[in-house]
Image 1: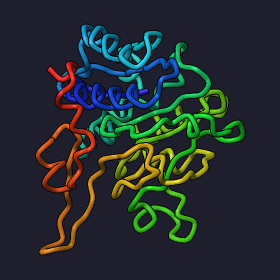
Image 2: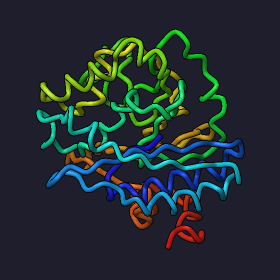
Image 3: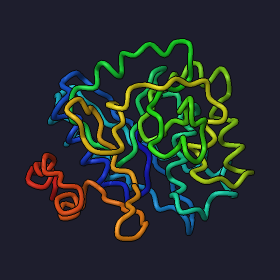
Length: 261
């Protein structure tokens, strides 16, 4: 599952292209979007056709389903966090429990996550006794979580037990918290505070340099300390920065395949 507004289209297509390159089993891709006047412009209905053309490059049985959840989203509009630096569209994932089409087990990806290997081992992880599983946030232990346990999860790659989430009302509680309480990274913070969770190896959400065993590379903002302390943001659709700042060339095929235009 992906979530996003119209600005997420390229990231979603890039991520899907890398998944289809490495995972040949049939996959159903869910994309949640919404329109909120003056705040979010959702993905257009026609984008569903683009999605379905591209997902079938991995397996002819692959399907993509674009779901406009504007009405649901506006009922629980995260008013306290609509003006933060994080797009409100990220919070759309907290509405997955309200959608009948969503299966009991679901892999959620941010739109700046690229796949390097089959993720079958990750998806097959037993999460029957928890609600979410993921990888600790690169900086979370220093600012949010327990520095010894290092259990503050990055929410960009999450394996979710939707059956348990629906039964516990986890997403409902998170929606209320995001609506009423201003937070830094609101949806990620609420999930970490309220969820029954488990941390998994970093190869499933590598937020630093790519390693040989990296399955998903997540292009998160990071800090550099020379010559001055500053943050750096490089996204996978910015080829020049990928080369010059990160020295990453392995995803160059994304800029040459037919889907790019």
